[in-house]
Length: 300
Image (cartoon, rainbow, N blue to C red; front, side):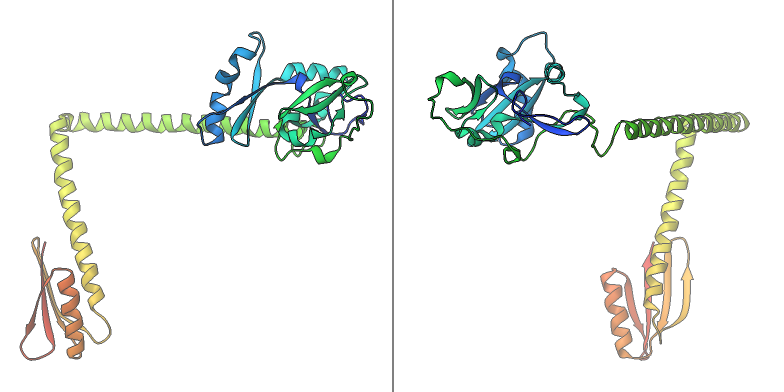
């Protein structure tokens, strides 16, 4: 629906899309060296600043037209009042569009009301008094073919996917989630408080731990032990991969600085395979005697 078109009627309780004529928005065409839409949107308030009234709360819409950016400002409250004057409830509106979005469609004028028409004038949709046009001027009918590819959501409407009732339900659900998160945060605070109390009791029982230097020394010691043990497990895991079907473990020696394993292979191919793997891991591998026995030594 073209807002302000007295030739159109609106069914009550039916959601509609409306197109705003130029009287209900402020437009400025600007050639800016910006590439992306989000960049242009950030500039909209400053681009339109000198054209807008100070006591109004404007919202902005920006789109590309050829090499220029089109900046549009509109007042939500002003549109709502105009809708009311046309006996249209704001809740009925699904999407807002702007006549400038389909400027090429207005090359043939469209009657806005008995005295005014919308027409394309120098690539801008403009309101023109009908009396200025020749009597033989042909007008086109405003229909769904004027609908642009994108628009602005005006608010919840009767046929919207999420209605008022669903909005209230979702709001309640989100509120309950907020309460749950708050309760969980309180529980964590209590757990932390209990842990802090336990730490305090531990420090009272072992006064030596009250020194940060002592605690750091203990932590360093056990970090090194943990690191060494992890390394041993990794090495033993690597060795276990060498024990394939046919390979036997003759002996395994392990101390704090050294791991030694003797493997008996079923054939020469097995020896070559184990030597190749040991070389990649930078382990020392040596053959024992003339049999297919190989010894692997690893420094920790």
